[in-house]
Amino acid sequence: MKKIVSRRTLAETIERAQILGHVGPGEIDNYIEHGLAHLEAANPDNNSRWCDLGSGGGLPGLVVALQRPDLEVTLLDRSLSRTQFLEEAVIDVGLGERVEVVNGDATDLAHDPLHRSRYDGVFSRSFAAPAVTAECAAAFLCPGGVLVVSEPPEPVEGRWPGERIQSLGLSAVSVIEGPPRFVTMKLLELPEMTVPRKWAQIVKNPLF
Image (tube, rainbow, N blue to C red; front, side):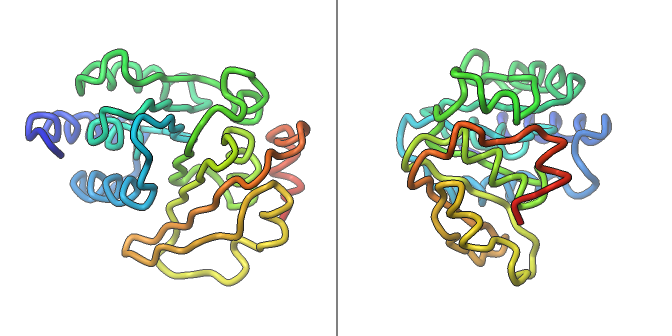
């Protein structure tokens, strides 16, 4: 991080998220470094607008916002307890008014004019299965926007099938081998207005 005090405070914030169960077990520094790698994989344009989909304890969104103060970052999560934590966290790490915290179901917010097709990019880390992630994220992206997803260490054949991805208006995936591994997809055309379906529907009957 550019400011040591920011990194120290960020580490304390992630540790608190860990205690509350918003972040899994593991070394705090590893979470921060992974967030920085997520940002590097995304390579956002200056002054662009990004959404952290299912932000949880603020990863990678808090890391991104601290490292890139030019970006507009929205931390989105369906859990009220997590978004309450995030609202406190953005103040604790000195982000103030620069970061928006939004509580709600992604499948509902994706149909809200304030969020639909409004983002230049979407970060996804442990949000949901690939089919659910792709269907939700596509509706948040503006044309040319990029979805950047954190991936398992080892590749899984057929995890992101091209034909199904493209039915949402997304490009075929590009893989960043890392480590850590990420995949990126660009929105080539806006998805149909019925996308995404309700959460229960896309979980029960995923596109792939």
